[in-house]
Image (cartoon, rainbow, N blue to C red):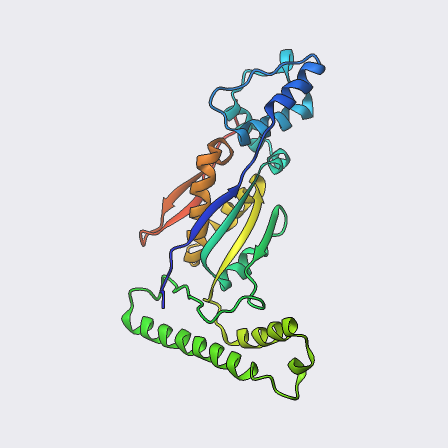
Length: 265
């Protein structure tokens, strides 16, 4: 049995900006855009969306760089343009307990999750909480509990799959019968059962997620997920997350922390 599998996050979808098409739009409108060197597609997409609001191109364009422009949008509370930038992630090594929390984030998020109704969980793994790890007696109790649950799951599957002559599952077609049996068996699996999550989120939604979830001292697993997401998206678009940093808690663990910034001049 694997105990405390590391959380892994893979970016499988990212923003794509058709710059040539956008420059064609500007040319047709007899405008030009002084672009900042080094800005990524996500960052340019945000700047372009923001400038369209005021048509601040050409002679109407300020001297702000892309980084300064995005910071000014955030400082002014004009974050709606950040919603044009999305990333898609495949997340593994998290517990279903964590997934029940994260799927509450609805605005700006989309989720697809491994189904316990259709997927056989006989070989399921479990995510040991960090607070238990390192305490031998607590680890022993935890491992005994999840082992019992796993054995109970397999036993229930076998008992219900004996195709009884009577009962609700006997009246279903094979596909729905398997679904009903696995639905019944999954009821004994604990919240620490590992799951796989496909998640898409826009930049504004991620900023909110980091703000409300990234620095909760009493939720280590959520903080660990926030850290993995933060490290990935800041490499992709550092200007979008300029006011967040990784900080340490007194116990040495890390968190994502939003830092206060003054308005740009």
